[in-house]
Length: 449
Ligand code: PLP
Image (tube, rainbow, N blue to C red; front, side):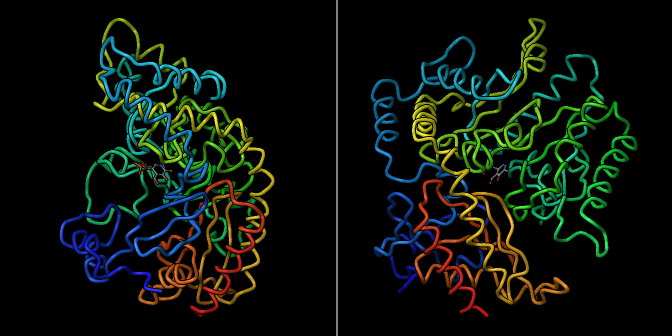
């Protein structure tokens, strides 16, 4: 199978003109790309007609799978009626209002107000803008610092690359003084001889010390993904979220939950922070699964407390984008959530997610696999040179990339991230498909060893 589609017109145009998001541009130029051209259910196909399991769900986003004509029709109908109109000032539209109301109903507790954007970076950027605006409006303009974590991924705008951990900041030297980075809650890589409980105590102590050192009056918020995604699917130790949330309460920090990946069913719930981890954030940021990728859409869902201040009549909150509240994107979001609810996809994921987990976990019997971790349909394989010492292979070994290539040759797309391979498939996989994905991945890793 010619999995790299060299010689094709799209490939040539791409090589010469397209700046790829988040990619090594030099490598792309040299090696070329797979031209994706079609999709159905849990599969995608390239321009040569090769069909693959979509092990990455587009990019953590196609939750309800491909070919959903209901969503496509809802978008088309909205485009015919009103393709676009501004929502600045006193203008609105029906899908945006209806989706805001639906999200307020689904989101936990006092999260009743929704700001729409076009992606996860915008959602997180907007959350910080709102928090800063809040503190300015209540006369605490010094309260600006944000606590984030090593290995976090919160986006790629100038502000959100600062929230994102230093791993992805190569070649960028912007607004890092705004952000204080705490350790990642990475149990697999915790210091030798330290128990999981001891590691959790360390993380909590580190956070409290950071707040006290910076001065609680200078710290605005803590931002965290319920399970870190692009940083390596890092599942924190049991109790981590509750204890970090407690510290936010103690020192008056807002808790921003970045649920760009984890919401809308990926972990078996609409919102993982509340439903799975039992905390009540002040802001939840979502994107991706909100529209299953059928349209670019994000939502920053904020509490009554924040909204009441930023909506006071003594000023305006000047923040927004031309395509905030885009009617066709909101129509897609509404229909997508209707499908998630009608088909009971969260309940289904609570049954099939653990099967996916167990199937991939079996890969730990292979010498190359140090750990398989994650939850439900958010999984990661950490490849190592030595299982006992957890030592990594040299970067030049390109182990994640070679495994991904070996998977692709066998009909499965997985994501390489350095020495890791990440999987976040559509949530509608059945047991037989899960089995086949496990089998392909096993064979691909054996072929890489
Ligand atoms: N937050 C998280 C947790 C993400 O995984 C991502 C993207 O993968 C983002 C934010 C940024 O989203 P976007 O790429 O849509 O701007």
